[in-house]
Length: 452
Image 1 (cartoon, rainbow, N blue to C red):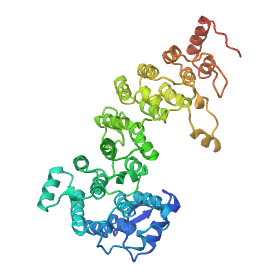
Image 2: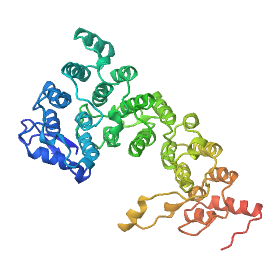
Image 3: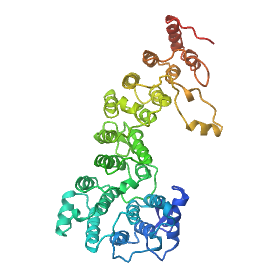
Image 4: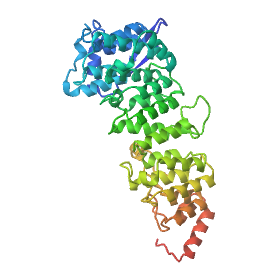
């Protein structure tokens, strides 16, 4: 259950607003019960107290990590799940609240984790403080040597928490150094993620608390961290479907031609984006046709489009679980309709797509599932709601695009699903008489007679 940190109404100090609508109610019971009992400083209360600066970093780390120490007195009513069968949901709710405390609680509840002896725990505690306050690998190693700390002495599950801290604090350089040097546990903390951890850090409208500053920089940083995680195999196969969708949202939808530092997006020309796509492809995390359409409808050059297909080849996409032939229109129609890129580039990208893919249905209409909900609120049908690519080109009067589609097998006798009209009639309906005449001449030249 995530929360938002706001100033007190009188301006003195900070207060918490809990978002109990952001995760399933049954998953929030444990957190709600704990918050009602202010006699115990357990996981959720530690998170909220630290967020509102009521306790120091040392107190926070002692309180949270104390649960992993064999000789620690840190045992609370809420250390055991209210229902054992719902443990994973309780962990998910706490991860939504605070990724670090959620990751520690997952270890507490793990049947395979052995509580740490005093020396091991002290090493973890001191290394955690270093990781929290330092992003430079050289400085981290130097201070660790001064304190006679060795990361290699920790069990993999415990050292994995250092990466969680780097993830929370956006310490990319230290994250990269540690991920190459730490052993990977059989189940990592990142395997517990449900996907919202990624989305809430990259959405500009998210107000949920996080340990690092909010801002547009979170988008490229998230892509860098996830690239490292995917390549390290610390996200184990099979990767959670919700995480996979969140990664595609980051890599295909949060992309733009904007270069300003206040843009919550990855720039198309960014090496970070290319590396992220390469990492996704290396783990067979292939975008859906709709997500590819999202990416290509604003694509600034044919070179960028070709680069995309070096990572995600047409054969890879066609053979992936996310490929649905009936959704072909959700890839093709956005390219036809795009107002974000020039006409020649749109046609070039369309020809590239049709060359790259086997198995696309070039006559499939666009799939816009949200329209059913809008209609339930009284929205009338629009002519373009269910266009297929040729109808979209006709509506726009785009002869070059229509020709590219026809060259690749588009059905000249296709009828629009909503209006039951042919391409020439659809064009005339939108005032595209020149296109309609051209299309009629094309039919005549081919000897095609369309029935009413």
